[in-house]
Image (cartoon, rainbow, N blue to C red; front, side):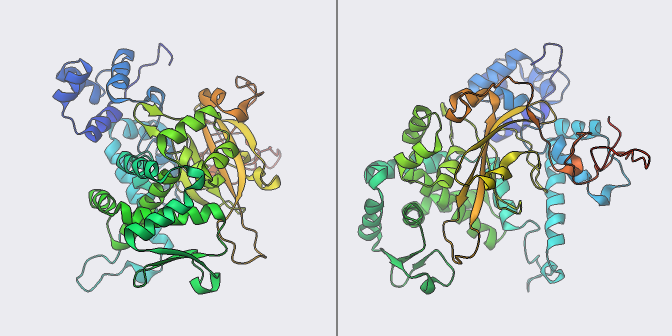
Length: 475
């Protein structure tokens, strides 16, 4: 980091301390500073020093770049800018320096604003009847949709759940070789829980890919499922049963706001556990490093699909044994995002889509092949990205296009560890500039801008046409 730049990271320091469950005296003792000095740091009355940052990294396994990056955790200035770009705030014109002050000095307030706006956005999507109350007079539903709540919860844990990892690794060790794990999984279901797994015609499942019949203790799997998806389905059902007490404790601790959110969180955690069973942490990390994160090699070694491997790569956050901190997106051909996990401070647009200059969609033009790109965000951060198409686990209508695109990426400093970066000039200044959603993107001369930037003064002149359809003043 530049030597003449003062870092005021009080909000993030306070957030970290609270996540660790420490008071100021305890944290001060652990990093070797006085409680009063720590108090000054948290109140941004003193800048963060390199020495304190190093002590935080040593004591709590903090990623220094992510910790010091703008908007690294919680709701940052870019996320706030996206919120205040909404037309309901058009007459306010909140300047960016105020957004930075809120994000840095009052992170809880920034998170609250984000949560309120997410609630408003979700309420806009619902029919009016949904806003009613139940018979007891309490709100009928949480203001956040279940998928939004669960996504935020998983992201708050950095998509890593240590207790599930440990339990899954122990179980996987008892089951044996990942390549032949399907039969041991079926046997454990049968012998441990009396459940038979059977492949059945899809017509019997009425559009489902799998169904557990509680009364007959039968797990029915659609004949349309691919082999690796069948294995995952069995692992998912076993995780629900084998880890039931652990899953219920985790759900109670998370305190989801309503039954639909609770059920979705239960399913999401069981999915996580299934992936951890099929790709046990230590073995998977070792293979990833050995094969330099080559996805096809990992698929072959663990009998998993491309999407399963890509998702697993975003979970390698074990203290003392971290993998590359990947982020991941899954999109369809229309640009709809159905999965989103961030391993680092990548500027995802929470309420919008992806930048059109990111070549993730180019993967649809070369099915099954890897496309790579080095992109640069408006703050100057560079990321190495990988795109590839995958097929849906079940294709009910053969006339439908079942292709999806998976995007993986990481800070460019990690790219040398990845096979797909071989031969690329990682220091090449000619990288692709991208941004967040067009409505908040600060790039002035973008030829692919699809929306006018909120809060900026347009400089349209009928006597002069610009490359961008919405030229605006900088600053």
